[in-house]
Length: 337
Image 1 (cartoon, rainbow, N blue to C red):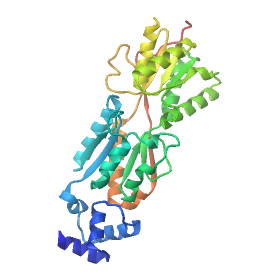
Image 2: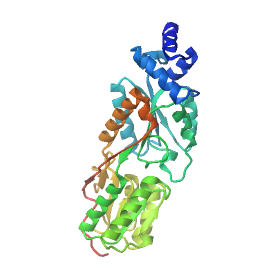
Image 3: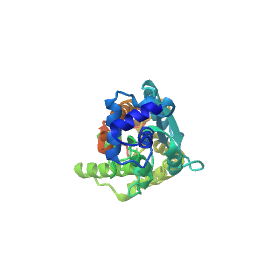
Image 4: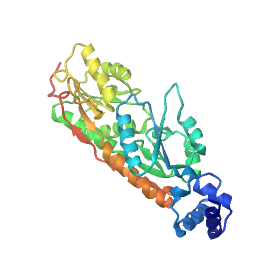
């Protein structure tokens, strides 16, 4: 290994310590110097993974609480694809009572990461500071941010087209005769919910549908919060509710039943995600499916390219995928209550 470092250092005209820092993705090396070392490694025909510590290629996946079934679906697909490429995934689950995003990034600071994938984080919140990701950008680590909107920092932004997702759900409800459609969204600073709200606002405008402000509810993601918010929407006269997640939709179903009403006879409900088991509940949920496998495959393919050419990691790329409306039993023709 000493000879190998010496050869690279001689070729690049730098110290062996600098070569070591580049190989193990350590901070403190300028982009130009890092590129010089990488070019020397390439010219000498040495696979980078063989030079890295223990030859282990690590990719961190930072995810929210796995109680929402859409996130285990993403994690399973990503880890499978990474393993096929010879990478070991480190799963970092952020929970209110456990370690948060800042804590995990601090612990990952000294790990020889080949890439990082975020399924949640500050990047998905409007106006949030992005300095927490500085340690990754300083080390020029290829990073992917899923389903959070595009922010003002480099990386791969990929996920489902939220605007299209809301539009096709609302079009379906309109075609069933619904005009008093409630919107059940997540936090009002959450970028995906903001995108869905803006798309809904445009849809109602284009379709000349009067949409009262009190038919929009912003809440935290979850069944319980969804139930409380949906109950208020129903009491305000909503005949249908378009939800920003399947969990919120489950809350809307519970709220409908608690009021002695029936789905879809009295209230129609649409979800978003098409989480596992949504087709097996009663009534089965009409929802907008995220193309999880396509998103994950494209994310891994792009990250592989970024690892091969670190210049690709120093730019901003966006990949959005078309969602699919899955019509099941929770939506029906509008009837006046």
